[in-house]
Length: 343
Ligand code: NAD
Ligand code: UDP
Ligand code: UDP
Image (cartoon, rainbow, N blue to C red; front, side):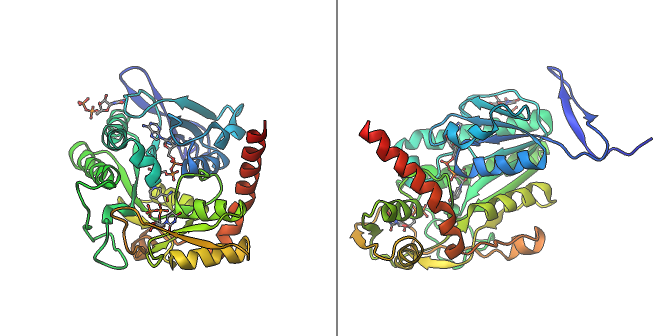
């Protein structure tokens, strides 16, 4: 008999078992929650390209059909409008759980909904993973470190988080999601993976989501001043989206649970970021200072030695190379928006 390298899952209402899908084929059924969002849609592109069957679950709170529209008509792709706060029955091999608004403006908009998404949404996806024996990957965040007292941040650092602040719905929500993930692993034997993602940018970010990269790039294209909050000396480390997608897939396919920091260690103050945007987009761009928001972390930079060693992963795209890659997408969408207003 011929050795089969991979199986796919077939289920009746109660039983799940694996059947061969073909010789030498490595094809899986994969759910991406939040797959119509910024990071999710890039992940979907890469999974489809690899030859997997992909089901996207999204409630379109911050995601857009346009981000995945190019897969419509592909029988390997399915889009389900669904809120992860509600249970769902599916049969798959892997679950990438991304559903959750990521920008401060969006997650603060309805904080109770944000925490429900993080807690009930993650619980449902873990319940699903348990029932069907799927591997589950949580996209957690560097925000679990809060306003960190350790710099750069290693995965062993427990964080410095305000439990009652305006960001808590997100950072405490993600901390609870990590706890749930580990408890399903320890208690129910679910195969889990945890990624702690640091600030990521690229094409398909929402134009006006208030994040610093999307703000500066939109502002520079619209020839408006770039808004620097506070004194602009706070730092962040910016990762290009393709590096993140590579890291998420390496984590899912690897043997290690994590948590793993996935981020680019290049650290910039917001003033330095404004300078880079100026350099690569518009040398005549100006800046304008605004009051900062509450509980804004002062510095953030990942220590990625663990991911380098165990996942053999590290980011490849520096900020000066990544920023120009999002400009065309932003320009086109801004142009369409402006034309829309004219109608
Ligand atoms: P995004 O807002 O573009 O994508 C989130 C997606 O989840 C959207 O498509 C949205 O419609 C969907 N969604 C939200 N709530 C939902 C719900 N209740 N049910 C179903 N779908 C829902 O954000 P992103 O930047 O792509 O982030 C993806 C994930 O990565 C998030 O979990 C986020 O916390 C995490 N993350 C992102 C960053 C970053 O810099 N982009 C940093 C750290 C962590
Ligand atoms: N769940 C789901 N899909 C499934 C299995 C479970 O959405 O295929 C949800 C389920 O509705 C519950 C959650 O996941 O709210 C946790 O499920 P689990 O079986 O772990 O816990 P229980 O249902 O026993 O509370
Ligand atoms: N920020 C800024 N101008 C903006 C938007 C954000 O100076 O127009 C700052 C913000 O105060 C924070 C940093 O940029 O210090 C990163 O903010 P973002 O919302 O992008 O991400 P997060 O705070 O979640 O890291």
